[in-house]
Image (cartoon, rainbow, N blue to C red; front, side, top):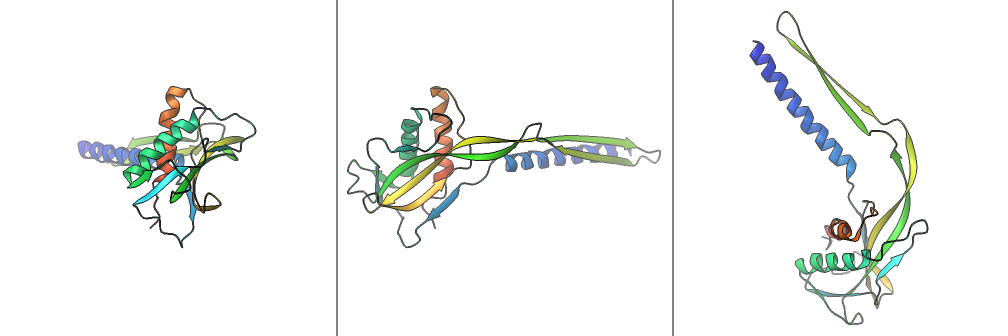
Length: 198
């Protein structure tokens, strides 16, 4: 009986641990916000070009955007879009879409303490019944911080109108250049995951 109780408890703890990991993953990531002109055809094959020689627009005021972010975002975008069947060309006046990057600032609330704590308690009675208690606690203090976020605009009509807009809800972390390539790749792939729209 004791072995059975221990087995049940072990399975319970494993299930709760999986649940907690799932909850933490859900809290940590949010899908990008996307809007687009439904009247346009986005299906490949299509061509794209950059919006000028420097397609990144920095709309932040508190922190300077890394000068290396643009080149890493461009490389990640080429990789993502060519994998989807789109072709990069040099002449933006002949491209189906013109790609522009925008970095903006957003005020967000963040927990100042540990976001979640988790505990499991177990007790065994004389009758060998096992009782389990689970407790969770969320961080109490919250502070307001500024986050930099990346957006990608696909423009039409020689760059005069936005056809598709996607913005990541993942903050751009201030990092060294050797880490920024991976960060830019994560952001771009996060944004373009739902492109083309269906």
